[in-house]
Amino acid sequence: MKQIFILSLFILSLFTACNDNGKTSSDQKEVKSDSEVVALEESTGSASSNKKTIPASPKFTSLEGETDIEKLLCQGWVMDDDVEVLASNNEPEGNYPYRCFYFFDDKTYTRNVRNAMEHGTWQYDAAKKMIVLKASDGSRGEYKIAAVGPNDMIVLNSSSNSATKLTYLADGVRYKDKSEDPFYIENNRWRIKPTKSETDEQVHQRLKAFVYFHILFYRDNLERKEKLISFYGFPSCVKWYGGGIGMINVEDLPDNWIACFYNKEQAVKAQKIMDGIITKKYKWSTEKISWVKKNLEVLEQMYANL
Image: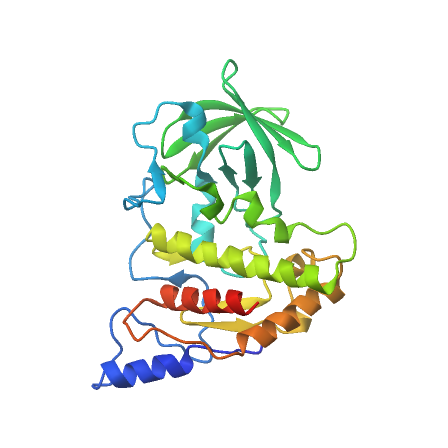
């Protein structure tokens, strides 16, 4: 893999200016040539308990105390058995299951966004206490709610021959503006394979949407004050580092990245555009900020260049 550490000079100058004793400050991570990470930690700390404390934010609506089931459902849900997958995986191929739902108030949903993403529409049948999913491919799923609160939900998957009890966990908040949620379907259409060959401009726009998704993803992690940041399962032509971004070589492009395009040729074309963008020069804040904010700043500048 060709590694391009776009923060190297910035970090070096920052260490020289702010750390004359040769030690790094507590909120910075030194980037080395072999510093590819399994999962990126914003700071030290162990995994949180099932109920996470999400800091108050003007971007979020808190669901604490909410009793309307449809409103409670409108947030992100992750199966409790899969939460720890992100702690030990960061590769773009989502080979391990990470089962999740993201329900939105316009009745759209995305599902299993770190594996083979599914999307469609949903309805809540109050009489049957049933979530009914209609996927874009025509398939249907039904989940009977046994219990639900702001942070926990127990459902029975009645789509299989025998009902299976499943537990999902949530943060108990949702975006006031769903377009700011990285997992809203409109922010993930770049992942949907086109049915016909695309023009150069369409490939360019698909790549631009890929970058914008990651801008939203970084912002979301900052908003939630996440300790652990994982890019596991997201189709990509780049590798993410704690203070840098590296290109994936053409011969190593993951299958799920190629699947976002009409064919491999167009997937490679997008990779080459990104390769050209990533090598440009970018401006950095002289303030002491976390690597997450540094990566976000450069992504926002890359997006402007696209």
